[in-house]
Amino acid sequence: MSYREEFIVHPGARLHLSHIDPAYKGRHESHEKAGPLIAESLANMARLQYLLYANASRSLLIVLQGLDAAGKDGVVRHLFSGMNPQGTRVFSFKEPSAEDRAHDFLWRVHQRAPGRGEVVIYNRSHYEDVLVVRVHESVPREVWSQRYASINDFETMLTANGTQVLKFYLHISTEEQLERFKRRLDDPARQWKISESDYSERLFWPQYIEAYEEAIERTSTKLAPWFVIPANHKWFRDLAISQIVADTMNDMKLSLPPARVDLAEIRRKYHVAQRNP
Amino acid sequence: MSYREEFIVHPGARLHLSHIDPAYKGRHESHEKAGPLIAESLANMARLQYLLYANASRSLLIVLQGLDAAGKDGVVRHLFSGMNPQGTRVFSFKEPSAEDRAHDFLWRVHQRAPGRGEVVIYNRSHYEDVLVVRVHESVPREVWSQRYASINDFETMLTANGTQVLKFYLHISTEEQLERFKRRLDDPARQWKISESDYSERLFWPQYIEAYEEAIERTSTKLAPWFVIPANHKWFRDLAISQIVADTMNDMKLSLPPARVDLAEIRRKYHVAQRNP
Image 1: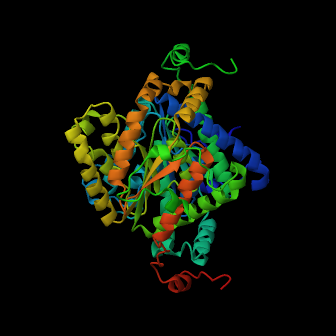
Image 2: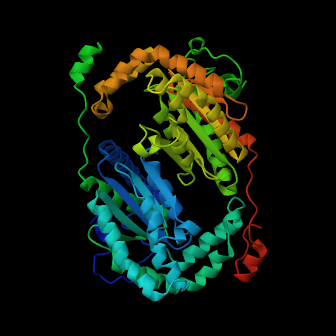
């Protein structure tokens, strides 16, 4: 069974994050042993991204969500390490601006949707608008609870217009998060990143899990599925996601576009001999 | 002498591209021998980009120009292979859209300028508006000749607002260009890219060189300098540019921002013991 089948949240299914082991590492013993598979999936993605870019007819949108220190930045680095910077973009959605807040919650994300031929990663996304605002009660339930339907409609529209949507929840344990925060505290190069909210938000862990479970259940659809990725082991998280991305791009049946010119005519007209004919 | 000093076009100096050997490779015997230096400059850029991003006060704009097949795409890949995709973006300026054309020539490029903390590469740029339009006489001389001043004013303004601007002309020979076009003709994976204009534009080579020489002479300034990079050897081109970028970023005197919180207080309050104190 592929990781795509193993980690997908089937539409309509209930999700219990507590039943999923964040330290799961599949059939792999170690990072070292999984090395060749990781390299293979990166190479596959590189090849498929070239075809996506060359075709310029379809696009890929990858949504990354997870609690602080779940590894979203690391996944961005990993996925893009195998792709050409031309044709790939990442957007990190932080606090909305005054202009963003003057519009509907999908306005700012829609503007960053991938163009034809592009791979775009949303590092956080429109899903924050059914998560953080719910946990902190900054938006009333009547408002955020309507948003699942708006999100599904939006993603259906993107899909109908040629965008493949994949959504990943990076699943870590509270212990692993604390461990990662500790490493930041001990690392002078990363101390500037630390905010007290990193720690104070931990008090809301159960509420976040509840919000994620409902959001994922309500918005995992056949065409825009969610995957819950065990993410305590960074290398396993990267391997699973890159395999799912590569498998999905493979199913897009991308092929090289034909030459736009008569190659024989070009050779003749400009006196370019063919080599290794 | 560093490549920054060697390849800079001094403000006010005349530029004769025909006096510069596109096959120059400095003091390096081969790609293999230069390998460790290439790795070192990538590592330097990675470190400095992290500081730029962490500080979020300055930004870096890299302009790439050159004739077809000069290697702009390759430089983008090389520079970004050492940087975090978060905080880096590339924009390829192709044919302007109807909306672009309804505005001044700087309108579309200004929108893509780097934000604080960002590194942005323009793959082609506002310089096309004193190059291709001049060669093909699609804009009258009175119009494009005024643009040098507008460009200098624009780049001065960017600089005054914290953006370091670096501009690179990738210098290849006509023979090398033809060789690269031939390789494309022979490579099934790249035949879709070929257009007849690749070849027909070669007839305008002298006009392009003249247009580049004047554009570079008129817009190489102390704060936004041009560099002419010998680019027949891809590895030398990448090495020279990455050293110039790293040297420039080094001069920006970037340092880690201080922690925003009292780290000892965080440790105490959340019971996080210090390790290796």
